[in-house]
Image 1 (cartoon, rainbow, N blue to C red):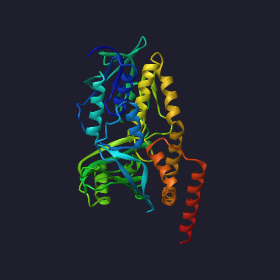
Image 2: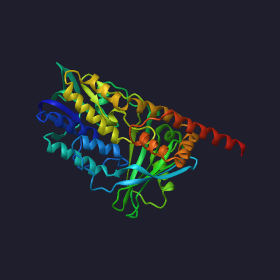
Image 3: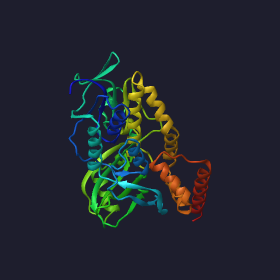
Image 4: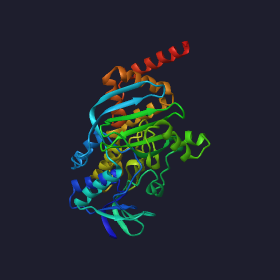
Length: 384
C-alpha cells in the first residue's frame, strides 16, 4: 500500500467513506487509499439517527438503498426543559441504524468501487512538492481527514481543538423496547441545562438510548463523569435497562468550521461539524465528506479554497443560524417557547426539524413568533 495516491482519506466513518465514494464516483480511475485504525465492522458511540437529509446524501453518492431494510421512523416527540411537549409526524421519515452496521456498509460500498482500505493509525504528516506524506509511507496530492472528534490530523496541521465550551459529552446504550415502538423521543432537562435524554427505536425491538450535556456543565457537578451520565440516564429512562454503554465527545459547531490547511481537508467531526442544538452529525459528515471528495478531484491543484466555498454555500447560513440559536438556547425559556409554538403550528414543527436535523434556517416571522411566546411565558411566570 505504500506509494503515491491521488487521495488519502483518514477515517472510515460516514465522512471518510462519503469522500471516498464521491472521488470514485467522479473519477473512477482515481487511486484512493482509506486508512482507519480499526477493523470493520466496529461499534461507534452515537445516537444512530440518520435523518432524511442523510438519506438524500446517500442517494447522491450512488448508494440509495443502503438503509432501505431499516424501518423508517416518522413520529417525533420532544419535551422542552420546562415541560412543553410536541408530538407530530415529520414531513419525511428518519432511520435509526446502528453505526456498527451503517459504517461497515459504507466502507464496503467504497471498497466495491475500488477504494483500498488498510488498517493504520496515523501519527505524522509532512508536506512537500505539492504533496502530503502520511507517516513517511503514503503520499497523495490531497489528504481528507475524517478521523473523528479527537482528530489526530487536525492536531497535526496545527488547527486548534474545539473549545470546551463548544464540546458536549454523551453516553449511549441500547435497550429492549416493544417492536411496535415507532417514536423518536427527545426529552430535554432543566437540571444541568443544556442537557437531554433520548430514545430512538431501531425497529427490531431495540432502541438507541442515551443522555448528553455540555462538558463544562458536567465538570461543574464535581462528580465522576461516568457516575453523572450513567446515573442521569437511568433516572430519566427508568423503564429501560441500558446495555453496551459507551461515552463519547461531540465537538459542536461554533458557526464557522475549520475546513483544513494546505492540502489537508477536514470533514465531519474532525471539522467540528455537529449540530449544537441536537448533536446531529451524520448528515453533516456525509455532506462534508462528499464536498471534500469533490474538491479533491475538481480542484486538486488547490483544494482548500474550493472546499471552503462549497461548505459555505451548503451550510454557511445554516451554521450561523444554529450558532445564534445555541446561544439563545442557554436560556431554557427560549426552548420552552419554541416547542410551545411548534405544538400549535405544524409548519413550525417541520421547520425546527429542518434546523435540527438538516440545513434549515429560521425566517423572521418564526423568530418573532417564538420571541413573542417567550415574552408571554416569562410574564405569566412572573405573575404567579
